[in-house]
Length: 171
Figure (tube, rainbow, N blue to C red):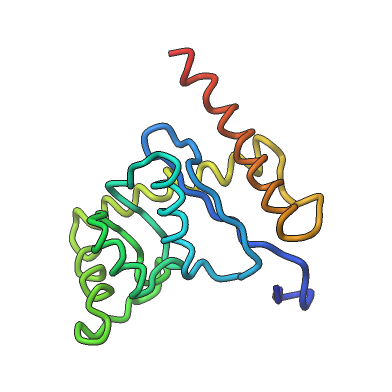
């Protein structure tokens, strides 16, 4: 990937899908594409395959916002809250004729309920990423090659889930 300061480096983009009730990681993806675009449907498919159920609600940041994936959420009957743009930046309204699903998402997130629901994303999905870095001390991959790195990422996510399960099982 191209980095801002050092030119091109061997970098990866890791994705997680998190259960909102227990903050356990239920699906992972890792690729060499810097963009999150197109990763959401694959993660939803992984959840469906693993649990034989699909999520009722999806909260995702602006990196996942594209017409195809928003339409797919609607087709699957999933209540999605996907930011149409970065927080703090003015959201450009989408043409309802060329981007109908994106337009509906912009309108949905403009409501008080939509903003409140989307705000939960920060503490639900960002916490496990922070725990992987701070609690587990996992900040970089120790292997090379996409397949090996995917395995290492899955292992880090599994380690976090095991650490999270201890207090959940003790209850």
